[in-house]
Image (cartoon, rainbow, N blue to C red):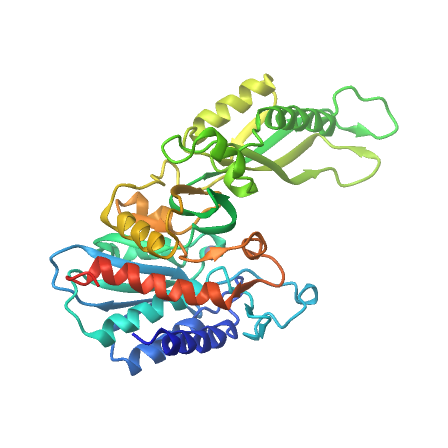
Length: 424
Ligand SMILES: [Zn+2]
């Protein structure tokens, strides 16, 4: 295969895709589905679309296999988070290249991955080999605001389209700056932390700001928050504690990435405070919102019980305001054919690199699929630097051209080994 030529076509396609503004809100992801529909039509690939809201669509394309195995879905989200344009040094919707880096909102989260998947999908069609399973290309909107009009909609309304064994999406990647035995490490996500948003409310006596008050709701709240953060800060380990099967104690110390260090631990952040509306009126109520992320070792109920015990005051209200997704199964199997193929594909390019199961610190659409029994893995097959990883939801988001080309080749290699009867 002429990867030189394929990669160049892929790069042009990515540049075009990055020019499409699918900032969510409002999304307007129909612009993204139009783009892919055009290419699917040219390549004579069947597809369906589902309108889930105004100007928002799911795209579902399939190349049929011989059904000897259950399907593989290449899945990604078409929306991006909004930009603060004045903080960018380059047009965020320009698809511009500077110093061998492709810039744009979505360059890393996750439009480049979508193109890697789409190019592999088109190649499968073009090569016209017998597939042992259906291969699906699925593009969903609304991932950045909870997936109600995207993956969550698809699961509720079209479950028959998800009778598949595997899905590949975002969530993990290689870390170029973290080396064990002088080799970069690769994390494949088969789990993610659970979101638990807590509301803490304290009550007190209202009155005039000039009068002494020993039952002050905001003060009670700040005391409670200080207690919670003291607990968090004294329990938080600043060293990675990996799975013993994958890393020894010495190796753990080398893994200094903030996100990886957090992956097996509870994190708590105060994100909102609400109280009072006038400088001389003591409010009777104060509220704080905490964004807490829980590793698989603790569930939401257990965490809330622990916080209540810590505060040890029945007058302080502790509530979960994470609406849906209670008790979802958010992990999936590790010992599978697809993981073995991903491992061998990585090790062909990066001999002796360590590959490990990663727990995503943030939520991805994989959780919905894992919950219905699909082995949904998060893996962009690239080797990102700390700066590149920092691009998620940040200004001047980019992917290097080398990483993009690596991702295109590895994605096709992984998919073809899993789905073409005779592995190449
Ligand atoms: Zn994303």
